[in-house]
Image (cartoon, rainbow, N blue to C red; front, side, top):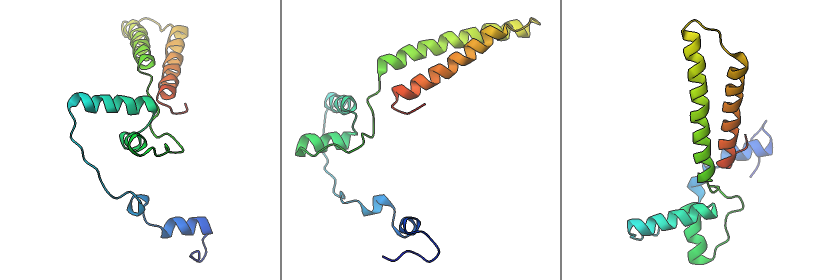
Length: 134
């Protein structure tokens, strides 16, 4: 295919191609009935493998190789629970500082800066637990 006039070949290709989902080779569906426990078991196994349920099933049923890039990294639930507790701790500190300020007192700026820095650290740790770069 010739590029569109005035555009680079890669830009032209993107503009003239259909949406990726319209061109998928996998257009057939396979439906099976599962109990709630079976579905939960499969979902958990796919999550542990870092795959979508479809990729996991394809791998198990056909021995198909997993995708080059894992779409859903396994979520570190214990780490997220720890981070949730840390958010509560930091929120409590910020509430105490706000209460003092609302009562006419002066803010403990080092404590406030520490709490805000802690929120940034927790945010980055959550992103990392979710498999995303901070």
